[in-house]
Amino acid sequence: MNSIEKGDRVVLWKGDEAVLLFADGETKKVSGIGVINTDRLVGKRWGSEISLGRNSYRLLQPSLADTPEILERDAQVILPRIGAQIALYCDIHCGKRVIEGGAGSGMFSALLSKKIGREGELVTYEVREDHLRTAEKNLERLDLPNNWCLKNGDVTKDVKERDVDAFVVDIPEPWKALKMAEKALKDGAHFAAYVPSTDQLGETVRSMRDYGFFRIKSFEFLERDMVVGERGVRPSFEMLGHTGYVAVGRKAPKG
Ligand SMILES: C[S@@+](CC[C@H](N)C(=O)[O-])C[C@H]1O[C@@H](n2cnc3c(N)ncnc32)[C@H](O)[C@@H]1O
Image (cartoon, rainbow, N blue to C red; front, side, top):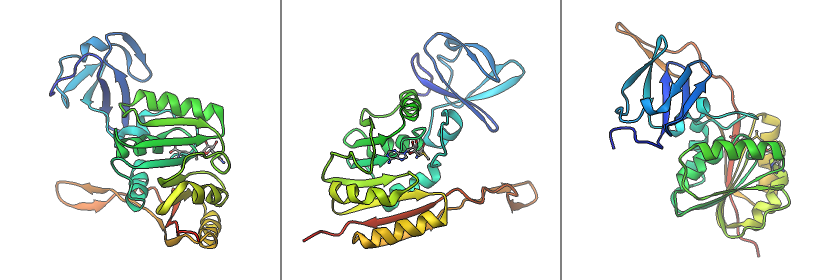
């Protein structure tokens, strides 16, 4: 469909701002924008502009790339561009069964849910109930397949699932999850950890070796925007110089 229908999720975008709204016919107060009757959005073409107050906003279908701007954040998140790299190296795609440790705000869960699609299954363990609630609220706001489940539990102790295709964690001590990962993963399947410091990366990778994980790769993923002017092209001066490090490896069969 080229036009917005009643009930659609719509991102209002202007420069660095992006706000997610439901076109459910209700009148909403949106911080930074003001009051809007969402019926005004219905029938407008995707990508078209709407004037609100003194500003003009583009009306967009929500995409994963928008999630950092539109989701509420309780904790440090895995940005979609890094999540996409983790999904690539863990071969996470349609129909895969994935265990995630540390829901946080649900940013990475959203990416995983979209990647595995309707045939896949995502089970996310989160120890903190407040983070679980934020993640749930965020995931429900997005248009995701009905394939995700949030569990209040410890990913280093409580995982019941077996024969899963990938086990990914964003927790402070990923090495403590390796015992559970070893039990839950299929032979040859992927484990990945995202950590903010090199000390955590070192301890994770050394522990992965101790558990027999192989084809281990650790990396940092940096992205630099380019500024394209009328007369020339240059790299942006504003680059996010550090987010986190990733370790990925495969489970070796035992016995
Ligand atoms: C940095 S946040 C995760 C952010 C998430 N990846 C995202 O993109 O929104 C880390 C989360 O892991 C949770 N956590 C820490 N240890 C855990 C454990 N052993 N099992 C499950 N969750 C854990 C914390 O409560 C916190 O919510």
